[in-house]
Length: 119
Image (cartoon, rainbow, N blue to C red):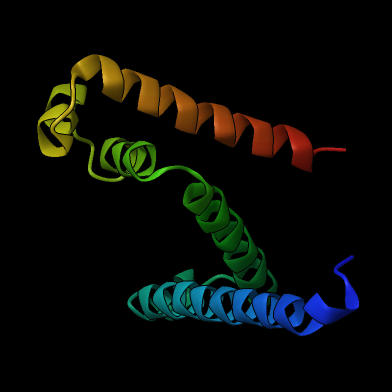
């Protein structure tokens, strides 16, 4: 708990964090709903499924933003873009060994998040 003279600064910091979280969630939700709008109505998930998917996407986004820049970028290049470790190494201007470590770090973070979410 902050000292009384630091309370305003503490509350301001919390408020800024909440605003960032709100806009990040809004951006994710908007992108997801835009993607859903491209699907035929018969393939559209229920509102409950949509809410669960948005929550999962927000959790994944939070997890990825806790990683340093290069491990996050390497993981996304590997998983979303399907790039090889060699191509990622060239794009990030690092060694293949570094890419292996980045991917391992990201996968470990994912594993920990899954383990922590299970009862």
